[in-house]
Length: 434
Image 1 (cartoon, helix red, strand yellow):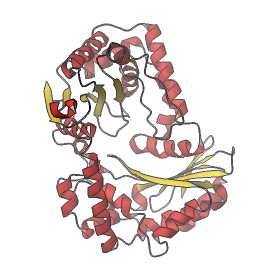
Image 2: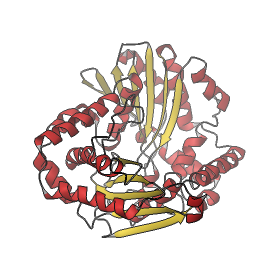
Image 3: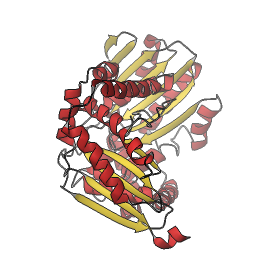
Image 4: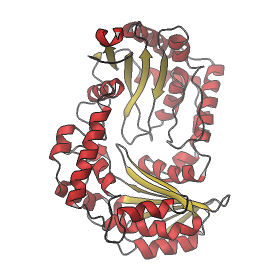
């Protein structure tokens, strides 16, 4: 086992390839344990979409040692909380609990890394659940529009499909498909174990070695897609259906999180639509009322609401702007306003004062998303999924160093007028009248 220390961050790697990251935080007798697997919808092949998300669900159905009830009770009976998430780039599981119960958490994660049952009856039960989840999402105009825009934003890259997968694939995927996916990717050589909180790193590393060290690695064969850069010029998708409002969605290509352009792009987002939280556990928020699109669309009654979404991904993704248009409004008029605001950013250098305000807002939102033990556990694995821990440690410094000229060059590079996908959803007239 190799060990590397960085202030209060301890990093190690077991002989079987498992990476371990530990962070001492003694503010409360609490630990947050995260295990990250380097597998998500980004690595799925046509015909097998939704595998990663479905396997995540099966990890709560029991092992030879822990029943599904045992897994629930392990956390709830001591007042902790847990969850799991599948993204395009990764799948992760976490438990935040009193530190006295850390061993039990590690025992669970080591066991379900290798011993999940994938009982055929449970597989079929979960098939119904996931298909229902997919069908329920399709009832929302926002989901339908977003999926259509995402499909147009990528020609071949798996970022084009929803993490949930396509319904046809969910119907045809077998128990063997799921179990093979699990055995291939749920292994120490494809995992990062992150623990933050009231710990003694030396004793925790010993516990981790005892529980995980004997798990054998397997050859890792993973589909790695080729990144896509340019969008199809002038691509537009229009939908119509029931609803109480119209919707406008615009997607531009954005850089990968580990690209130096990402930090200037984050400022562009803050200027246009307000900053996005990269952390789903942030304990606070920042109003986007000072953003250009809020002032131009919402305050001028072109839209009822507007927000943006910028994600940190392994490969170049998309930055999206969503606007809810009132029933008597015109999505095309709102699009024209968006184009005007984007044109202003790409055609002339912004003032230092406006850049400083955008940086301040982005920094504040980042701080809100880093302020507790669960967040600290999250950031160790999340940053390491596309870069390394230094990305997180240096984020605020790199954000503050962004200059107006960098913002201008980045905007001109990624936001040309013909390099976008436009999606419009119109509520049907019958529904509007009702």
